[in-house]
Amino acid sequence: MKKAAWLLSVAMVVGLLSGCGGNNGGSDNGGASNGGDKGGDKEKKEITLAYVAWDSEIASTNVVKEVLESKMGYTVEMLQVDAGPMWTGVADGSADAMVAAWLPTTHETYLSENEGKLEDLGPNLNGTKLGLVVPSYMDINSIEDLNDEVGKSLDYTITGIEPGAGLMMKTEKVIEDYGLSDWKLLDSSSAAMAQALEKAYEDEKPIIVTGWTPHWKFAKMDLKYLEDPKGIYGADEQIHTIVRNGLKEDDAEAYAFLDAFNWTPDDMATVMVDIVEGQSAEEAAKAWVEANADKVDAWLK
Image (tube, rainbow, N blue to C red):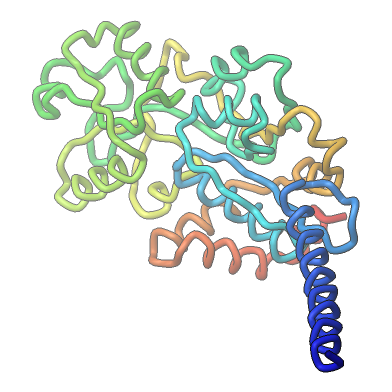
């Protein structure tokens, strides 16, 4: 009987110890599920970033992720989506933020559709541009030069990117307003567009693509924008940071960093070129953050 009572006592103590351990683990997990809730010292900080798979946005979003994780202790989830769902995701709270809003022209439709449902923190990069891009060896300089002779050499095709992107919608309007009824805009992807451009450039063949700056292709190839006399692509743009409503109240630390984040086209190009030359997006972002401690420290202040 004494032995049985002793064994029962040991079992109770083990059970109590196990229960304490389970409660501690539950506290950590609970912190993770609450994202920016700072209620406990050991709670896990989480944030979700939405982005579109443009080379520029892959670069910027990975740099933001690297700083949040390595300098601020966050766990970052990245959601790669098309432009429309990117905006909708921030507006409905599925994502906390994006650093990939091209304004005032490219994403103006998405901004107006989600008016009041999100917060614009302003530009994180100045000096962007959109338009039709050709190799410099092509003897055309304006969209108005797209005559039958040029059209036949290109099978009347403009190589585009993801369908539904703001750049694609603007290009459809270009085709309409410039009377290019024989031309077609080929749906593709950012990566496939760049690959087609590189192949044509290597062979010195004609090609027209939908293009934007910043992009690594301008560092690797001699290219030019076709003039847009009607101004359909708009003037130079900015890339803005957009966050969900309530992020400032829910997570002031992440909000402050996202509000401070800004860099230059040259900064972005450095990351993009590293990726094109074989580094992963994570490796390229980490290398840039380590090499630009002064800029990163300014964001964190």
